[in-house]
Every structure is written in structure tokens, then in C-alpha cells.
Length: 138
Picture 1 (cartoon, helix red, strand yellow):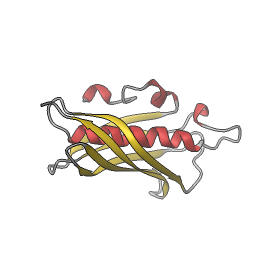
Picture 2 (tube, one colour):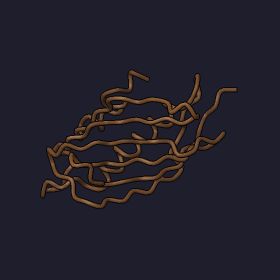
Picture 3 (cartoon, one colour):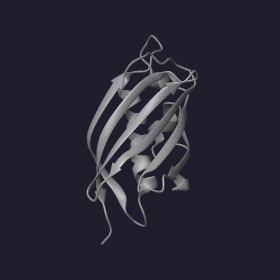
């Protein structure tokens, strides 16, 4: 999974200023992932405010990475089945943000995950919940 550090294997993450820095398993079948995000102009509307859909891209990637960090062997997430994103505070181009995804519950076929974006003062900027389809090797 170290190959996913940086842009998470998705060029769009790097293009909008995201960089995955660490991940791990929680020892109870779940995982987590963390990224730094300094939004680029590509992530923003003409006023320099990060567009909500870009929040969703980073939050989805953090949740997906967290799921995969908690799985063993060749088991992997296969698809995002459902996702809800809420933006509570404006994020601006160049602002230093942190992104974190954590598995809430890992089932046999699906994983339930949440992720947050926080500013440098720890204030919640956006959050997301998601349900992910799993592919398990027999």
C-alpha cells in the first residue's frame, strides 16, 4: 500500500493539492488513512473557495484508503456504494488542511467508513460517510 502514498494512485488528488502521508490498521479489522491538503487553484471556484465536489474526491479517497489499510491479503475495496458529504466551513486555495478516513465497521461484503477535513486549528471543514463494496479472495 505504500505505493498509494502521495496521490493515492489518482493523479487528480495531487492536482488539487492532496497528499496521502500515512495509514494503518486499528488491530480490530478496521483501518485509517491520513492526508495533507493544500488546495490548488484547480480545486477552487473563481473566488478561491474549494468546490464541494473536490471535498468529496478527497474524502472518498481517504475512506477507500482506510478500508484497504484494514483488509488482509488480496482483499480490497471494489466500489463506493453510497456516500454523503457535508461542507460546514469554506476552505480556500493554499489553506493547510488535514484529511482523515477511518473504518467504522468492516463487514464481510461492505465496509462503513467516515472521513473528515479539518483546518490548521482542528476545526471541522467537511465530513463524509460512505459504504464500500468489498472484494474478498476465497
